[in-house]
Image 1: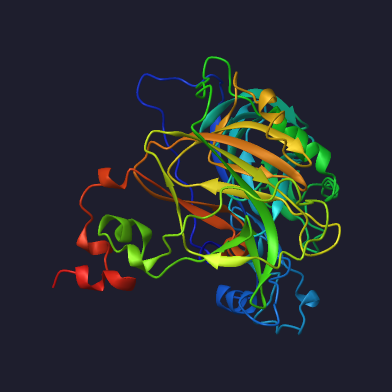
Image 2 (image 1 turned 30 degrees about the vertical axis):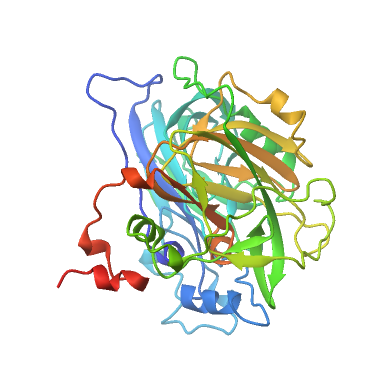
Length: 440
């Protein structure tokens, strides 16, 4: 949970010399969207591990490029003026200055701990052109829905009244949150960058309106001329049922009723150095009781367990992952989960509502122009289908990018081609049973 404590940033990768992008713009900006808690990650982790369970709650603020605001009078217990002073210059909103009549590329990343967001710039349309490093067939939105771990590039034309500034806002979606909107200033030169717009910030979409979020997911296709076709078939299909469970009195998140625990000895070293006794060798389940499990009902899930076992994949094989969402332990409640895969990009073959049909739904997979991504949402009471090539030797995490959910067990690990991994440096040794591998 170190990301929400501030360990994050963005790296911009330039094109190789001689290559050009399939769209034009005048200026390039990067914007990171996050949320902010007053409680430390240590306090949050303790509460998540406690009996009785203490949920982290909603964040106190939304930040745009590290800047946000908090109403000091709303603190409970009240905060002293030397602790909370929202008139400090350090509390000024983030402002990005733009020149009228130009086109800007905004590279927008979400690194939230919990929140799914909508992002908009008052009075301006956003043309989506890239997602997770892959070119998108352009489409226009007013609100960009973005989930933790995702990155998008949008083009914005500065074609509005240049005598004023405009609001850029983020709002929480998918949760009935108490967090106020994130605010920034889209500053038209030569207006002062801290000059507030004359309007009130635009309101965001309804938090529980799933349809526009689902439609945006479906709309994202690979750009013509930049399509990397997926293999026509897969060698293996693994279905991941996403559930909330109670295991030995603890509230946990699980995949196929198994909640993930991270062992003390890192997988990569354990696999390479044959320390296989340091984690379970019982293969984790590749599906669930499809016929009898009702994803719409509140389930007891009394058979849930914890495990640190991993999925062993054949090197260079093609793997399909079906993310199946379900109801939580609360009635009529299903959450959005952004799933993030390390070490690979995957093709997004399709989305669907309700329960995935293994016979008929694959017939409708998009094998023509699917986008490649590394993070993708599974929407409430819905499914998402992915395909990837297991062509990167190592041990790779696949997990919900919500900090507390991964901490509570919502993740798995894939191993592939470990014999192809080179000699590991002694500098990475020291955790768990790797201490004896440290060179004196």
